[in-house]
Image (tube, rainbow, N blue to C red; front, side, top):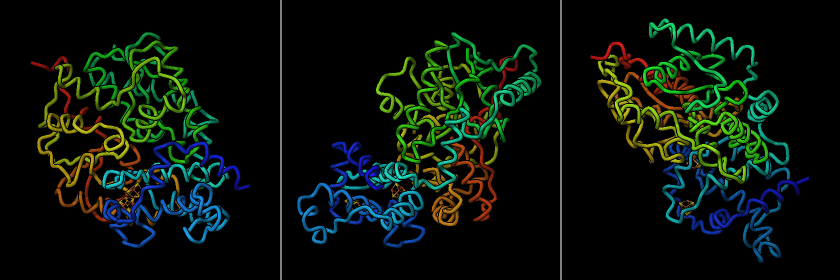
Amino acid sequence: MMDKALEVLERRLSRQLAASLETCVRCGICADSCHYYLADPRPEHVPAYRAELLRRIYRRHHDPVGRLFPGLVRARELDDELAEELIKSAYGTCTMCRRCVLNCPMGVDNGLIVRTARGMLAALGRVPKGLQDTVDVHLESGNNMAVSEEDFVETLEWLEEQLQDEVDDPEARIPVNQAGARVLYTLNPREAKYYPLTILAAAKVFYAAGESWTLSTRAWDVTNYALFNGDDEAAREIAGWLAQEAAELGVEEVVMAECGHGFRAFRWEGENWLGRSYAAPVRGFVELVAEYIRTGRIKLDPAQNPEPVTYHDPCNQARNGGILEEPRYILKHAVADFREMHPHGRENFCCGGGGGMMAMGEFAEGRLAAGRVKAEQIRATGAKVVATSCHNCLDQITELSKHYDLGIKVLNLCEVVAEAIILPGDRQ
Ligand code: SF4
Ligand code: SF4
């Protein structure tokens, strides 16, 4: 039974993973990088401790001493008890934010180790149910909330009417399945189901920029929770749909809606999972909006957002995705009073909602406890609005605001930008 998990370990044993499993010197420097450890400094919250669980299995099979005398090097066979420990550790107390990676002097990639452990548990069918359901629903229905095509189209038609009212132009469109459009835009199902106004905000930005864009009714979900459950087969299938749709529509680029892990999964991991290059390049919405501002395609009035605003960097878009300057560039043009958190950018702390944590109710208490680090960062800025660029971050920070009484509003960047937009007809 455990063989399937060990096969995953063997298959994924790249040079990078082997180096990470071999080179930890147990200095403990990574401890202070991790929001779990800072919020609750227990040994099991030290990143190196989490990695040690997989390292023991690795030593049992790859260390000559570990094979013969496991006790001498603390090697251990994967059994039921260790699998249970791994579930709590890899799914329950790590958001795969990779802040610890940045701060390890040996370059140990604990995020990679944790994802490998998750992949092994996925092969055993032991992914926490909420997270596995999200992946299964995506595979079965084409999006992770099972939004039917009929409901999706109806929502877009209603939003198109809203857009026409908002920009006072009966010709304003939310285009669907338009072959030859320049941009294929994606959405988070959460937007279609619960927060359609973020779709309206993005549509308003595209309208103001005069963009040639389209949505697809066939492949539109920006998310890929298989990044988090660790199942590469599922991740490949999900990434493949969007890649294929972009090729069939013949777009010039795919623009990922504001979704941290979705951006990382498709922009940085997808081509590896698929083993081929995409037909069209991939950018985040934030990168495109920064370009619109820089090239004068949209104009913003910061006075429309007078309250103090801070920005939370989604780990998978910033540290793990490379989008660092663009959100700041946008906010400096879109709001009157922008305040940085400390630390921010590449060194930003995870909000606690990453790694699929929002889908695993059994770990909610620890998630909110670990979010204390982010709550304190936000409070110290004195901001009344937290802008971010990820729906998981948005949900987690909204919960943190209630839990820690922060009294803030949380918005995605597209909403902040849409509020400040000067429509083409109103430009002087
Ligand atoms: S900082 Fe790196 S080398 Fe030091 S204990 Fe952590 S993972 Fe190991
Ligand atoms: S990846 Fe993030 S949550 Fe996981 S051990 Fe490292 S710092 Fe902690």
